[in-house]
Image 1 (cartoon, one colour):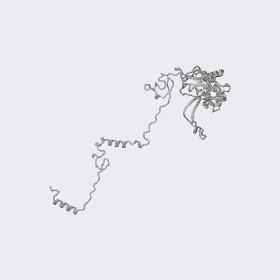
Image 2 (cartoon, helix red, strand yellow):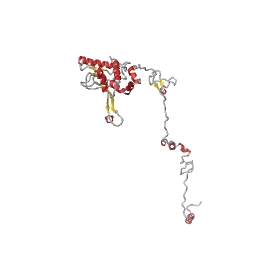
Image 3 (cartoon, helix red, strand yellow):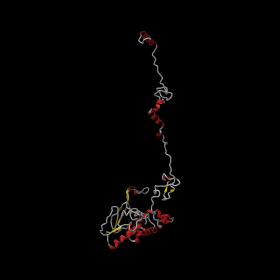
Image 4 (tube, helix red, strand yellow):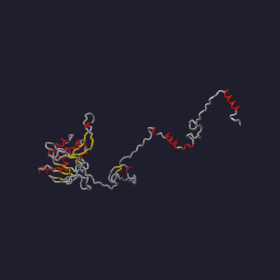
Length: 337
């Protein structure tokens, strides 16, 4: 074996370099035929992503998932299918409520469904509602001009006959705008108020005061407080109905008669917020349940949610929404008796 440092070998190498010019040799970069990447030429190279040992690599799995699941780039992908509950046409035989068949209990069948959303499968039984008076029923279902006018102005008729007034805070910036449609925008709570039983001197009676004022001018007073022109015949029919059935009218007339006959100005009626708990708690009140009449300075324990109706007062009392007669005093056409 010839030593690389042999003088004769070194002299021969130097002679060859002097005779031939130096040529730069450029080597081709290998390209893998499997993955198309440079730097290697076969799929068995460890840097090739198709190498079988790289299939268990966590980084490769993440990159593969990112390449295969580009859902965020497709705008119309992932739209949920439309779901329909069907018709609410299943009438439960226990309470006659109408429900969706999908609302049945899990242990019941399509043929004999049972429900607990309404009456707890028949465990809850409510008393029957009082029948609608014929006068109101005719106006609600009739086809004559008076009935049509009543349904068109039903809120105005109710407000003319109610015992309490509606109290709201009106947003005046848009409520009285002259351009466009009329807006009635409020902010805060909606509440009911009641005044004294007798009006102040030279004041026109309103709301509960009309029931105890001069009967000859009752219809005219109701027309005066109404925002719409009401039918006098319809209004007189409803007035007679309320006088005949509503217990508040009889109680208010009693306290007004006491104040007038005895000349007492400080007669008060206290309408209790709560009554003896029984099954009639939310039923229509009777004349004996309406209130307690207090004469002179007789002390009586008055709750903070009780309604105190005075014979004469310049202030309106706000009725608690927790009072049991909160709706009955305002919506007399729904609770006529």
